[in-house]
Length: 193
Image (cartoon, rainbow, N blue to C red):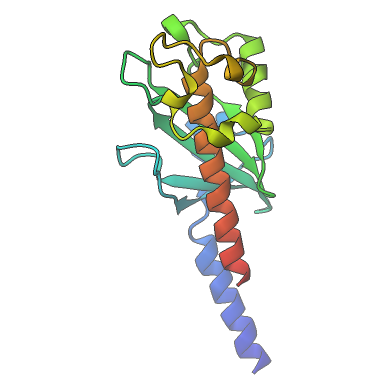
């Protein structure tokens, strides 16, 4: 009987390993900016309630070369939630195994009003926002709630909680971070039940 249990366990392990594959070369150095030992990935589905397009529906579990689980990667391609001439957002979230936000990765620089690129200080501010979400974000349902309806300027009470002239970008990335962590947490709970 113990022999059958051992064989069953080995088969189950082999089946789960079949889904784990090497990270493609063009992503390897990019993912290693968050997880220095990244070597393998495993893809899982995730819903994207924030985008109207059927994108952003994968989350990756990242492993080292010994198949030790390191954390999660989620690549996002979306809009900022405005109806004007805002540039699309392309970014990658790195989430540790706890799950907590650890890093934002970008291939192309993020931009703000007038398509000005984020500065190093802007990225630092955004990292702080994503690490510890401002309490003011709890009352915001959509990006338009962050700006004055007549002037389009960021509401004064939110000025310290965003990168200047990039309120929509900050909030949209925050939304995806929150949704990703909630999804991971829910799935972790399901695994324990």
